[in-house]
Image (tube, rainbow, N blue to C red; front, top):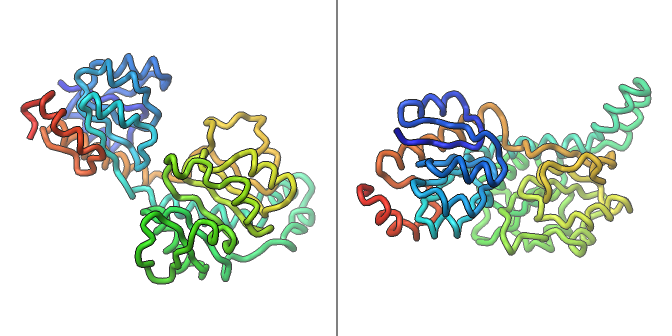
Length: 326
């Protein structure tokens, strides 16, 4: 029976789908050595944690690494491709969950929720209410979306249709903009937006994209929301801007170092919301991601290529390794 290794427990519906197709095993730990050891006799690995490159050299039976989600930065693509391992993902299935988080974070920052909640509990009713004098509405503001894939488009739709925000975006393609969205360069977007949302993938091009210069271009009341990857932001520059009250605040769900150390400076700001990489996690999205990754796994086990194959250049190598596959 084939072994399906998953880095995390799957949604019950996904587990049920895989129960008859192979032995489903949850990794005992997520460190590089444990994952490499437990993948040695695996046929499929379902990925929700970073995989070490060495895993692919030792896992001679491994057919596919299926990403439980969209981002591929957890999979060392060159190592997987060199080993003849298919890589697939399940794009767009958590876009709505992430987009709703963006609106929740923007509202919480504008309504000064952290300060209201803290002082209401510690100092009483009037102390909490005092913060609302400086609270602000969403309507009429400009939201700038960096990266206009499935998540960026979902953010734009909710922002424009649900909250009457002006929506601008920047994307690599910069093709015709959809209704109620204007495309701008990254620098123009940073300068014009009241709320900047990072939805881009982590690449060599986007690493450090929000640097000291671009933070300096932001409006003094602007909010920065990051649901992409931590290294897209220059942390030192953002911390300096927050310390000097040069921007309005930030909501950060992803970080260069995860978990974020408990003494990290981000925890010390009243106008910063810190969450533990949870924007895309809801009961509904976990079901969709789990079912999507199970579907891709079942295709591979049935000697078919996954629908969302992300390294097609590996196919000929893969077919030589597993000649029964189509």
